[in-house]
Length: 348
Image (tube, rainbow, N blue to C red; front, side):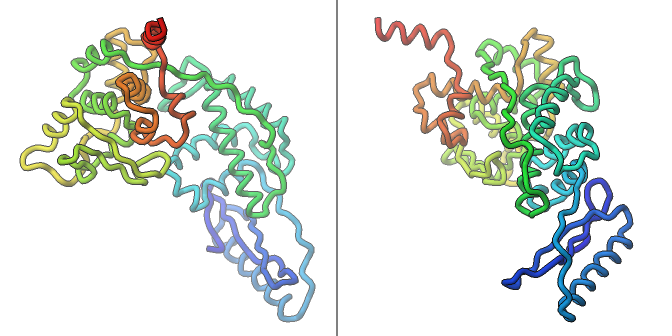
């Protein structure tokens, strides 16, 4: 479409600007305000002017770049179909908010690497938010890195579309992130189960033994489960990296969960788990038990470490968890004191 509405309510038009010596037409985009009628009228006028110049052989005006503010550029970016198609679209939109707050109407073409570095220092001094509530801790370095990554991608796409020439994020080093090596011990796992609701317990047990991500579990449907071969088949649209994979479920606790929830005769449609959010119940159980610093995603670390300790080779673990690089496996695999002691005994 030549006229489209951006996230901030303004309208953007796309119109032909000039034709190259090879006959290729170049287009420009322009943000024109909140009136769709005025935007449509301007787009028609600019298109008519272009056609008139073509018919009468009038030279086209020299190409000049339209100045975008950082805020408008970010709104343009999150309005693109390719961005809307991302699984992480809601996260991307959320990460643009502090960027727009900080840079406001700064011209995108004037942004420099020092400005991006300044954002990093400013942002990590801000208090984190969760569910519209202010947290006690500051925004983590990892969160700041994800926000700058959105800004960098936005500028790359703008350069691709010939809206800008340079990316101010190039050369800016990401902040050092604290590596997380928390795993759930067997004692903690067993203590947690009776403290959780049935839905939350079933989801936690599934994560503990399979290493599946939270979204993969709560969105799991019955037709993805092969009870004969004991495999869960995740489609590309089910996984974070877009790659399909097979996850075995051989442990009796997971088998019992699927059998109990499936009923008799077995269900073949719909989702396996009936809830989307167990965060409050999970965090409440941890608090009552005095279990500190345990997050749901740590069950993925736990499953990886347990598989490796059980003798499963690295390639197979990577296949089950959906990693393409050994670096990701190493990130999730935790070497603890028992591993070090076994190594010492082996060479003694």
